Length: 455
Image (tube, rainbow, N blue to C red):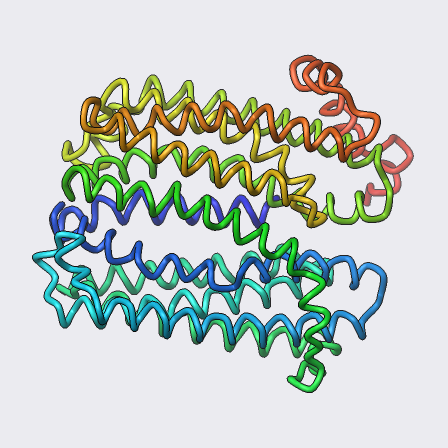
């Protein structure tokens, strides 16, 4: 949890600083065009077809069972398969962009065509390197060093941001920033690979000769479901930006993205809990420790709900002054847009936390499809409402979709957690705080231990 807290705090810090920095040095219009360009290569995160997450889950299970022959095969096969898929997807996307007037479609006028081309190429390479590094971080998770893997990626993002800020301060433009991102990520991936080989002897045996395609075929179903999750997230994140760019203006893109960044601070806060319990769910459920899994689910839902409620209440009261100070008055906490976005964040927190039980053991196929349908439905409803309500229409679409997903996901999670009931779950979330006292007692030394600790 500490490693995830550092990671989320770093992400939040980067977002809080980068928005006013880029608004000041690039201006709202140029910054909006950068966001639109960044959106296009982001779809390459789908090119792994969900293999990164599925292989990482299986690596954790195999390592826990000390089946190191299988871990070698899994990692070797995963790295090669993700590499092939990335190459194919990158080639296809570049060919498509070369054949269509994407600058005209996205209304990009300040960034020249040549700069746009270099920006897109560098960002495509950057996304491919991110996928490889995310898969390699699964080695640390499998070996019980989850925190080390997260800190590697956190440090990489921090260095990327510092170099980006330096380039912008020196007058650097979009394509130079994109190239710097790719270079930093490549160096970090190389360093992580060397560190894994030094720490874990079995990683030294990773080689293409251990690639076994039947192992990959076994993971097709959970992998495709992770792809569906990624498609749904892309619809929520990149799809909403593209929809606003098509129906409104780049300035509206900046307004929505800034308000969403503030909302994402809450999602990143609760992500500290969900990402931390993911490895524990994998072990508890796969080894049949149902009672442990039920306790984890209750405490995770309780923590994320109350954290989200407190943070949302704080932003509802202080969001206006925070935005005014943060963006120097360039973006305001428009109402009821801001309230609708906060409500969608609360609902998303509820179902996303519960979904971790299913995701951790590759049993998330049905909820992945529900998430995709809900996301596309939210965009469709937003497209209908935006001409009349503006950005509020898009936010309202996500509120409706997330409210439905809360019910769908909870039912699926409780079906996996045999013996758990909806009523008992709600009672535990609202009233059961005795575990906090138990945790304190676990960390409080007894009198005999305390005496032994005395000099």
